[in-house]
Length: 77
Image: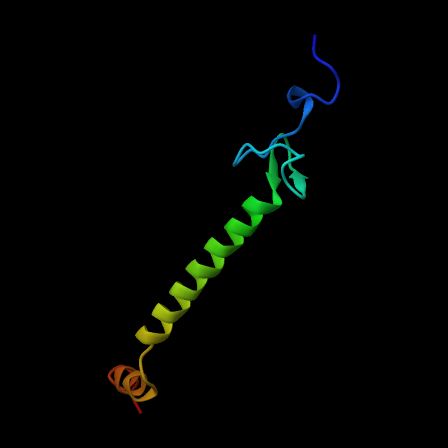
């Protein structure tokens, strides 16, 4: 016989499986839950990927003179 408050009644993070008692915050979505620890991990991943993408993009930008020379091949006058 299960009692109210046992682990079978606790909500769990859909990502890591920790119960609501094992984390500080559990955020609900439609049929899923995510804990504050998984949110922190996701934020770290996003920040890392954005910084990698930004640094790559800046290195690949052409210089103004290169843009001018390229456009000068097509613009008449």
